[in-house]
Length: 491
Image (cartoon, rainbow, N blue to C red):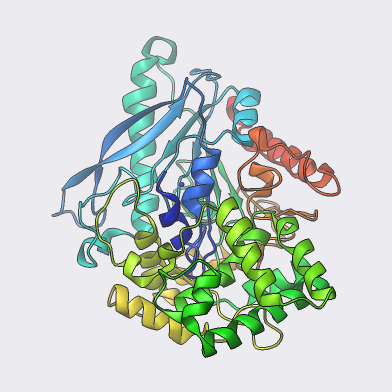
């Protein structure tokens, strides 16, 4: 997932330097703390003229038979390559941000190869698909992953029988449903796997790219992976920079925030959360080369690391991810107006109520401020929503976490991605295959987005994967092989 860049960045700070794609995103995410899922989705959204968008009536509550109220849920479609008789339908799931449309990434290549239609459904409560104009805490009660996968099921039924079977009535006379296949990245990758788990009769299989299926409360492993991904020289430089920032912040918080052009952040902890994202997002989306070389050079030259870090944050980080520091403030998260520029509040609510994934400082060496503890996130959730704790155990019991029992689901990861520790990385079940793309900038959703991952590369181009894209290409080839196997009855 598109909403304004401020909302996108805000989604990242909550421990979810997100999870995206859904539709890449942006989303969402995240996309999973306050990650810029919206930005990712906007940048990867297609500008192709043959994509169209529509809406259909979706239930607000799938689980209460006495509650039949509906809302307008937006979806996008492209049928340029579609064979309505024998072709499959690819459902590309948009996640925790405004859906920018069908991404112009590897899904386009697959659509041509398999004569498939592509559809993508905007996640409830995001963009133009909100059941309520005001996103108060009581109104957010229907914003759950369970409601979201039931949205997908209802949409699948609607699109198959009210769109495809009607539009192509003559060609499809007497035929059963087309085969469907779901795709998602990050939180949307988890939704893709969970949809196949709970509705195996509605989809022939799924791709869970960087799919965060293992829901956790505290997530120190996130920063442990960031440290490994950047290497010792960059990690030491970042550690020194954060130590310098903390010392200056304690002595003169106003001057510190002026230096980082972040005077809109009244909370020191919100400010430190933004700085943590400034390092994490560069690794997550394949941009560590914009961060590490100048900081390592400054560190080795004995320069002031606080000044060097401020230079990186205010130029590279704010520019690459289009960040407005105010989007990291709790005041911003309290804004309840729904619309295409919203998204951070919704995803933060999901983490506070259901998902967790709170990125806390590791116990040992840390490049994240040690002030970012679980107490900070608890305070934030209670302050903004009056909600705590998230229902972590119930979510994992419902879906299975890394013991998920879905079949015909391909779980893919990037070797540098900080989210890989809550995905399925190893499986002994051939119906739940796994693969990890190994390259120096293989981050979140690399198999679909290419390198770097923000913005997503056209057709999932791997030419900028370092040192080369051969490993990513091999995983893309595996996606084709699993599609051929799992869609075989109708090819």
